[in-house]
Length: 153
Image (tube, rainbow, N blue to C red; front, side):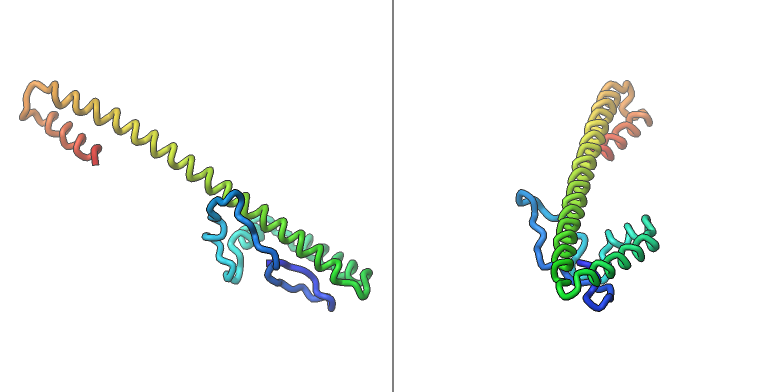
């Protein structure tokens, strides 16, 4: 969404006219998680909650109104600038979200792989203990075999 000050000084929100391109044909996780038809964009809502820039927002809107007044009968120049700045911000937001998502997935895979390697080592050790147990009916052997069965699942 593009936010700007209209010619009559009202603060309006309009969809961007430029589309956000996926970089290098990569999957757009941001687009999947944040549909365009949502009333409030989740990222914008969270940023507003964290930043609380109410007074700064008021000063920006006042400066936008003064700039539009100074442009007189050529407000389209300012609105085009706002559209381009919003497009750049959306592309940066999308790329940052996708980068963070991809990094998190890789980190999760690495942690899961390390956990599997650890459980494999444990399963191997339990199997060795179960095989070397002196008494097949020994409660420890039964416990080791049950643990081994759980780990192998």
